[in-house]
Length: 286
Image 1: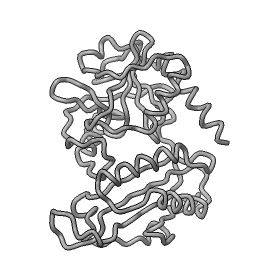
Image 2: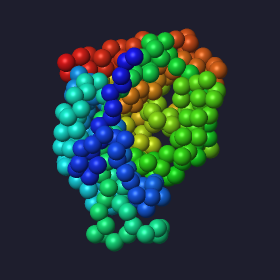
Image 3: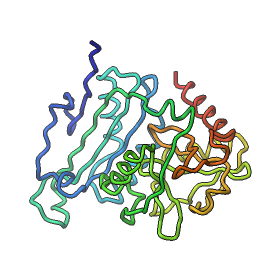
Image 4: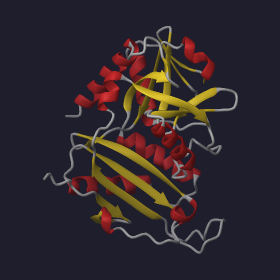
């Protein structure tokens, strides 16, 4: 029987098996979801887009008024990764506002934050979907108004992901009351129309995805026009291709929405060009 390597954690600077980490029930991440996080993909033993993830973490520390340090967390993550010996993995980083008597306002500034990192082997569950394309459903967006913050408050996302799973689909697209499609529960959304890539402009309403940022750069390098404009549910009949991006999703074509084919009902040429460009970036890490 094959033994699955155990995840290795770094809890406030101390390295230990993830199963040995103990968190107080008074931790504000546990009580209120008062915390932020990042997930980093590791290819060939090297964290991918690591500085970009740390930069977003640093911005969110400021937005959340959390007294932590992204550079220190990055150093701890690298130390933990090296100790794990994992080559294909994910790094999870989380900062909570720490432990304090339960009250809604922030505790005294001297209360220390809790900093958790863990590294675990990655099993790619999207590989086949990247080849043949996935299916999604459209659901109402029930999230709060600061989706630009990568908070652990993901209850609405979890409900959406469960609804998609129950429908036999790979993801749920979040739609506002006016029919605007913003992103998935855990992915960024792109469309292709008349050879141009379309995606919603950044703002408080969606997460500034790290893979999204890379995708836009790769498209520009390939001479593919990129337009930041809102995509609506009613526009899908005119869309030639649709795809999702994310740290573990990478670039996944979407061939069906609510049971209806997008374009020809198979991964399109623009999506495939961008997938190859992405693979080339990964190959250069080896």
